[in-house]
Amino acid sequence: MSLQQLRQISVTLTSRHFQIQPLIPYPIQISTPPKNPFLTATLSHKPTHSSSSSSTKTQDNGIPIEDVKTLVKFKSRHNYIRVLQVSRKADHPFAGSRLLLLDTPGNIHSISFLFKSFTDTYFDVFATLPPILPPGPVAILGFGAGSAARLCLELYPELVIHGWELDPSVIAVGREYFGLERLEKQYPDRLFIYIGNALKASVRDGFSGIFVDLFSQGSLIPELQDPNTWEVLKKCLRKGGRVMVNVGGSCVEAEDKRRDGKVVMEESLKAMRRVFGENLFVLSLGNRKEDSLIALTGDLPDLEAWKKALPGSLRCYVDMWTQFCV
Image 1: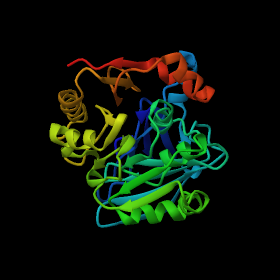
Image 2 (image 1 turned 60 degrees about the vertical axis):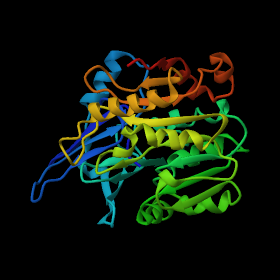
Image 3 (image 1 turned 45 degrees about the vertical axis):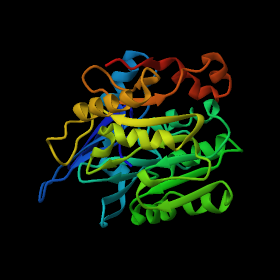
């Protein structure tokens, strides 16, 4: 799953510091050239509403290398997989978190904290979707280690989730390092995980909602730039169903330098627009220089009613949606 948003953070590993600078909300990007003693990465978490002076301080502060530990690193058939642990003592919003990085550039595909549910990433935006859906199960295409699923299962007691992940090694890592096995045991009748092509996801009578977070080699998968893909996904929805998509942006660093993140994002949104028409909205988690977007289909619901159905910390996202214009 790849296309992650919320305030991006650049991370530079040197002999002294692991520099993490919040820029835009989105997945991590990591570049590790052979025999290069330096590691560069970008990390994401949700936009904040603090003062500019506070923001500047956060961007300038680095995380000492001793506060970041690599728990696992290996190559599977589909991914270059890394799990990082950030010390609880680190002076950073991600202190105490565990991160799943995929692809050579290093996108963050999952994040979890030991003592809190909200992640301060685009996964929190995903968790605002269930209250505006009709009854029925939801799908997560690009399941990762289960960050979005965990939040939604905790917040909405009646919700049933079907998740698809292409790489079985990612699910194995999720079970070992991100509490996914415990989550499956806790919600045996509400969480179902499948290994395979997410674009072939289906259930009887369709989904009430679909989360799309599909990246490969550090870029949104090419199928998402094809209107036919969105036609298929639209047919998988129940009446009144919606799709919420992590479409990335210029903050995304792909393995193939020809796949510019901003261009891929725009092509994906245009493909969605051809299928969903004017019922397409976007939420920006970036800035003019480093954009990062979440997309939502369907009529914009009653905003006040939507807010009332959400936990207080998620209500700020409701007013951030704007209609997508070509």
